[in-house]
Image 1 (cartoon, rainbow, N blue to C red):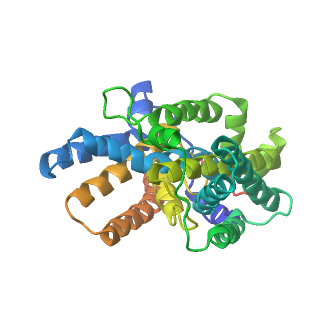
Image 2: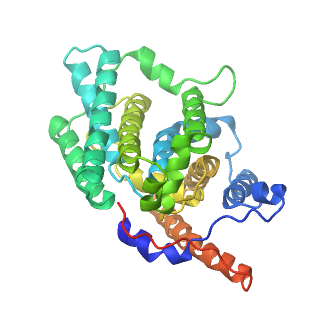
Length: 352
C-alpha cells in the first residue's frame, strides 16, 4: 500500500469547503451511490419478476449480512491506506472452530466465543506483522489468507459439521415481527452506529483519516499510528469471526471453504461506496449503500436466471470502476479548480 500511496499522492485533493452546506452533503460520491441504489431497486422492481416480493427482501439481507459486518472495520482499515485480504479466510476458520468445538461437546455459546477470540488473535497477527515488523498489509494478509484457509480446511477436511442448536439456527434466520426484515439487521445496525461514531465523531477517527492522508504528518500531530492500525486489524479479525458464526448458523453448516471469495465482494463494496483505495477518504453510509447495491444487483440477476459467473464478472467490473473513478474524479476536481490553485497533499516520505 505504501507504493501505491506514494504514486497517487499527486492525484489527491482535499475537500473544498467553499460550497454551500447542502452541496457538501448531497453532491458527494456517497449520495451518488445511494441514488444509484434507488434507481437499481426501481428498475429491478419494474423489470424483474418477483423482485419486489417480501421474500426477496428477506433473502437479500440474509445473504449480504456477512459482507455488511466485515465492511465496517474494512472501511476504517482502507481509510488508513491499508487493506485486509484475510477476512474471508477468517470467516471460514471461525466457522470451522465453532463447528469442531461444538462437535467435541463444548456448548455452542462458548464455542462461538472461542471463535471470536481466535479471529481477534488472527487480526492481531496481521497487525503485529504490519505495525511491528513493518511489512506491507497487502503481502501480510495475502499470506494469512492462505494460512487461515489452510487451517480451516485442515481441521475439517472435506467434511462438514451440521448439528447446531435449533434455537440459534432459527434465530439467525428469524425476522423482525411480521416484517420481511431479518433480525440480523438489528446487530448490524448497532455495530454500524458504533463504527460510524468511532470514525466520524471521535479523536480516534480523526487519527484514522490523518494516517490515510500522510502517516508521518499524523505522527507529528500526536497520532499513535502503529497502535491505531493494530487496533483496526484486531477489530477486523473479531468482526470477521462474528460473521463466520452467523454464516455457519445461516446455512447450518461449518465447512473449511465457507465464504471463499467474500473478501473481493467486501472490498468492491467499500470502494464503490466512496472509500479511496489510497486512504484518507470515505464514509460509512456510502459503504453500506455499496454493499446493498452489489447485493441488489446480484439478487436481481439471479432472479433473471443469470449465472453466478456473470455476477462475479459484474462484481469485478464494479471493483475496477470504483478504483478508476476515484482517480478520475480527483483529476476532474483539479481541472475545475484551475487556475485558482489546487491544494494537493504533500507526497508522503514514508509509509506503512
